[in-house]
Image (cartoon, rainbow, N blue to C red; front, side, top):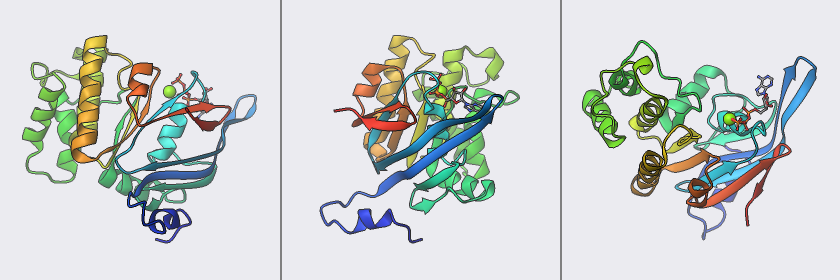
Length: 240
Ligand SMILES: Nc1ncnc2c1ncn2[C@@H]1O[C@H](COP(=O)(O)OP(=O)(O)OP(=O)(O)O)[C@@H](O)[C@H]1O
Ligand SMILES: [Mg+2]
């Protein structure tokens, strides 16, 4: 599909890297009790394939809102969103779900595990949905990698917050996404477990060329990313 942002990835011979996600003039307003609230106010961003970017900013500055729009979970009020070479801002939920299913992994701030499925079943689900025969083995391996091999049969309510977060991370990796969005991926983890999870995120970023877009308050995590972007006043500023 032709769109204005494609030109920038194809015209420069020096720039062979594809764009993973790009937004221009992004606006998000919501209707609150005391009137319309502008959360994002004309924001621009381009992230290349394989890049890692941290989005930082005060609580309530709109980081989760932005991440949801970048990942095609939510729609902007205005502006364009191009995800994995597809313009998604005007697509309906079903079409956006298809793009997400093919390209996107998402770790929610609130985990959003399915309560009636065990840890293993939560990680297997996205694999079973696309008919992968190795769903059990892959889910089992991923839970080992996040240190939960002793907890595969536990339901979310039987897991600590940090353990639920690790199941959510394993689930996000399950479909080998091109782009992984993670909202505070280490927010509920102790320092040592957090470091292990961060190492895993960057290992997958290196080995599979996965693009990483993280929201974090953790400055040591942010500083490990290729780019740090500050969200303030509804727009992003790149850190020097
Ligand atoms: N659907 C909505 N209706 C009304 N207000 C909303 C809605 N969604 C978000 N907001 C408001 O928009 C602002 C941004 O919310 P968002 O969750 O994106 O912030 P955040 O930067 O992720 O914060 P935190 O660091 O605390 O997670 C908040 O003030 C929130 O109350
Ligand atoms: Mg948030």
